[in-house]
Image (cartoon, rainbow, N blue to C red; front, side, top):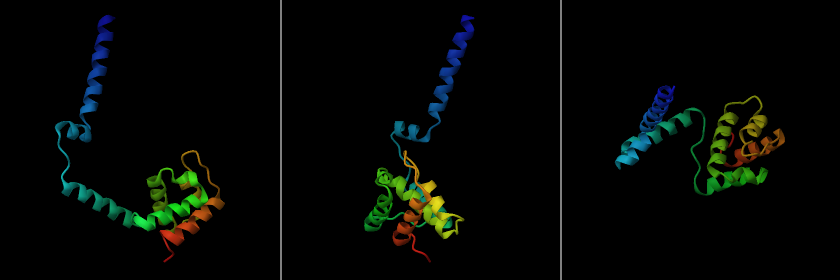
Length: 139
C-alpha cells in the first residue's frame, strides 16, 4: 500500500514537471531569450489580417480610442474599467453591425455584459449608436 502511494506521488510530481516545462514563455524567460522581432511582427500582421477579414476595424488609438471609450462609458461607466476589454468588444460589435446581425442591439447587450454588468437591448442600442458615431460608421 505504501509503495502505491509513493508511486502515485512521484507520478504526480513528474506530470506537473512535464507540463511546467512545455510552456514556451516560461522556457524563453528562464533561458533569458526572447522571440525575434520578425516573429512578433508576423504574428501582429496575421492577427490584423484575420480581424480585417472578420470585418473588425483596426484597434483605435489616441482621440479615436478615447471617443469609443466615452461612447461605451456613456451607457455604463463600469464597462470601461478594463479599457482593452471594452475596445475588443467594440471592435467585435462593429463586425456584427457591418455583418448585418439579426438583432444588433441584443448582440451589443450580450457582448458588453461582463464584469458583473448586465445590459438591456436598449443599452445595446445606445452602444450601437455610439459605435456608429466613433469606430464603425455605416458604409
